Image 1 (cartoon, rainbow, N blue to C red):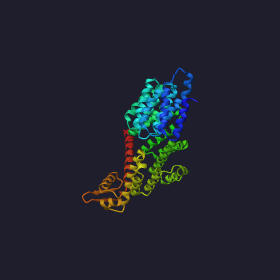
Image 2 (tube, rainbow, N blue to C red):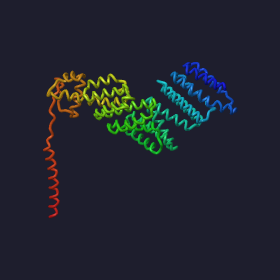
Image 3 (cartoon, rainbow, N blue to C red):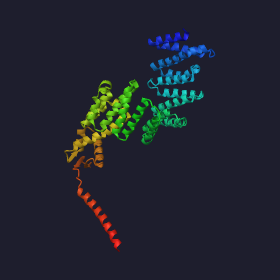
Image 4 (cartoon, rainbow, N blue to C red):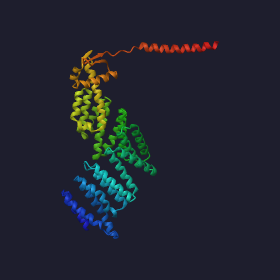
Length: 432
């Protein structure tokens, strides 16, 4: 048994005992000993390649598990020095794996961007085009997560040019999908839809992994939600949910939970509360996806069904993290709040011909200025007919005027008579 093999086994035992510092020292010593390896000795070289790969990955694992982002930030760019004896494909695999491990370290996005940029510099220096492209896609995604949309779009545009030249359809699918996400965040829905269509077109000509197709369906559902086409959005969310549900991994479970919330959101926005209850009582929801997020959607559905603004506000307050941290649910719940507010105001003023705004404010539990502003907007939108007397702080409510069909009928008759007179004039003109 070689010294490297013995050192690896000893380090692994220390990791099992959670003696990470001691294990780290052994791994670093093994790396330094391999750095000075005689590359002309092919037998020895072949015997340590796999062990060297294991050392690098396991040391990266230690830094990832212990959340040592400073050490990981320094280690990943420096690890390329140790990889000189590895095959090019192995180097690319190890480097990308290390960067993926970094993603598990919380609050490390800036460090991930730095590491990715340094790795791209290494790929350019070594003239490894495919490694550079795959890392650039990751970097564009990191810029997107960092909300640095301009840098992300600039990188996306350069990548699209390269991938179109290479006719790299799988990469085009991923980059166009990311482009759609960026434009959605920038509220440029037309370009977001165009990018998604381009991504689907590329996907139709190749075999796409289940995760990619699920992501495409998720993005389609989000864009239909933005268009307020909740019925179509629900169908896309359901397709995506089924895909993630069947994958049975931790990441897919998180996505499935998110999609279940979006499915419930679509049904709430369509005011199909019975179908919301059907989803909540489904076997997969009860057995697998019980969480505060699902409880939050249930509370919102009950409040909306009861037309209760108080219950709605209570649900938002109790489940603020679950509901308001997600941009899609937050924007649609703001619209739902306005709908509920209008519904509650209409219910309160229904029995009155004249009512004080302070009384409405007290009953609904909002500031008088806020109520007055909303009432004036509702009058302008012709949700009800009335007049605000701001001097006295009163609201006069009028009955909804009935539309008399006689005027429409008379106008239609006059139009037809006009056509008859025109025809008679044409025939009379022939006689002369």
